Length: 355
Ligand code: 6CS
Image 1 (cartoon, protein in one colour):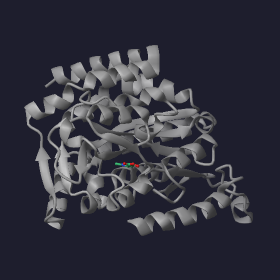
Image 2 (image 1 turned 60 degrees about the horizontal axis):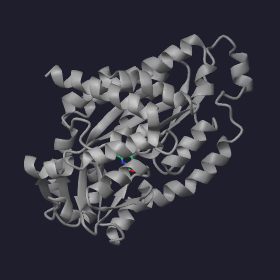
Image 3 (image 1 turned 135 degrees about the horizontal axis):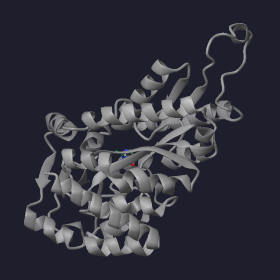
Image 4 (image 1 turned 180 degrees about the horizontal axis):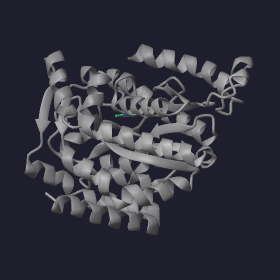
């Protein structure tokens, strides 16, 4: 785990050096000049925040499969650490060094404050079928968010859920008082800090690369993530008490550099949209039941792990603190956030009514 991180950071500089100055177009060589009748493909670069076989990687590989099966283009996929942290790959995409990026709203909050809506606790359902239906049908997700990303030079292609957020800590937590004095790592957005403060903890924003080590050395006493990531990152080894609070979903977003996208032919735009739809349809199947499967893998791998599922009454004590986070969200985002939140709630009502 840690070795992967160090190696990844070391190669990032080398890759960056070879990329700067590339436009994404295939270099003209003697042989491809001669084969003028052949369709000329370009090489596009796509970076995400996870490791081989994780949810964002499965999405990326499906996107790649569609692009390469249906065009002469090639897609290079870069995983966590190969080009730096989440903020680095976003910056590289905005600069046009990368054509595609998968960045989670957990890190996009400083760029697009409204993206922090996903961190209002107890807003989103935790059930797989409901959350998937929400992402498929929500006007807020599919019509309002693309406009917000466009303001930052990004063409939002898809948002999708990766799984219910589960807290891990150095001991089981059942009440806000149990969080007292615990430093809980959050992704780096201010609203998530508000959530953990409201929950009674001391929020500690950190980039992903520092989380395992900080848990191991007790610099932090807990963190939150979906089960598949707790399993694949080995977080249960250093933070063995799993607490199902029911407060949220890990959500992510996949997008393109907008100048690049706008410069594509109509045919290539259609190709990119279809590839994103293809990957989305696959991932919404893939994530169903993934948490249960990976929880079993954790339990098989460790005797130390405990699982705490809050009762309705225990959950209520955390839910009671959600309105103050919602107020903060409005304070941070103003009218735009208010409109988004209203639409979110209407979209969620429809999903719940369709039960
Ligand atoms: O906690 C994090 O920072 C990471 N969690 C997941 C599920 N994906 C990527 C992200 O960096």
